[in-house]
Length: 317
Image 1 (tube, helix red, strand yellow):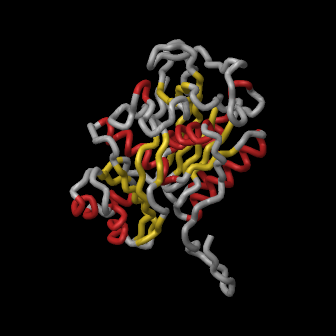
Image 2 (cartoon, one colour):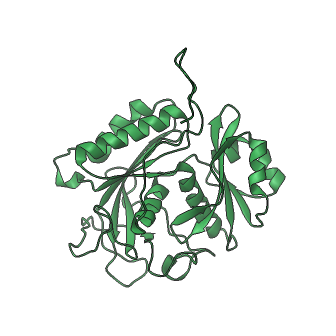
Image 3 (cartoon, helix red, strand yellow):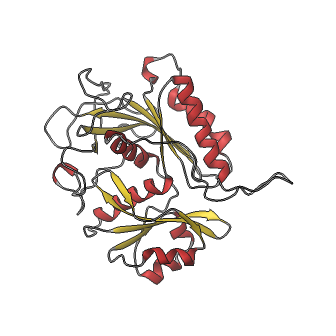
């Protein structure tokens, strides 16, 4: 199955990912996949969590046995196109059932870092990723999109684009909160550096106006996260209160980099210095849909837009 992932939390990130259900017993081995149309051949998606929160075969201790999707990367050496066996059970349109072992390969990776060029960038990126809609090589089974919280314009551009693609292709749209994706990436990085089991990540992303979006997380299995707090938009100093009562803590996100004094005050490392992560979005979506969760695509603005029509009432979104 092929999944398009769009993240416009700050700049613009677009991935076309091949998700293939493994049908062999060797860990780390899997079916061959076609090399990408752009980027390094066989570039793999985010690696499975293999640190203290991961159990046998990459499944975390918080995941019920047989539940969720165990996602791991693989690379291609011969360019043979992957396929999904028709007898693979699915849970949701075109997606594997809970308990399936899925490997991801990034076929196309497009990105730009300018936070003011979402609309101009998404069209060319889509043409690069999807090419001719009538070609079997550009089939699409689902779209995953960041739902924020993030600045209004970029978030809206990404979600509108995702909805248009889904309507045109007749495929489902799955929304993933941007901070959830950052948390998953940060937990992977922390685990690779020997973080203890039960590590909590405080995600801070840039909300402009000298504020940050903030929430705390811990791992839920190998490919998902559990949010421990509400999503907040607040001054950076106030976000430190979310770190209370967490012994094993790391910081993550663009806000942690923008305000480095926060990590210094807490004496903790910073991981995943980004506002979103298109690869982690796919892993989270697969894990959650595999459990039968509904993944809505309504944007999480958390506050009013920066621009208002004079004379209109300001309402929270």
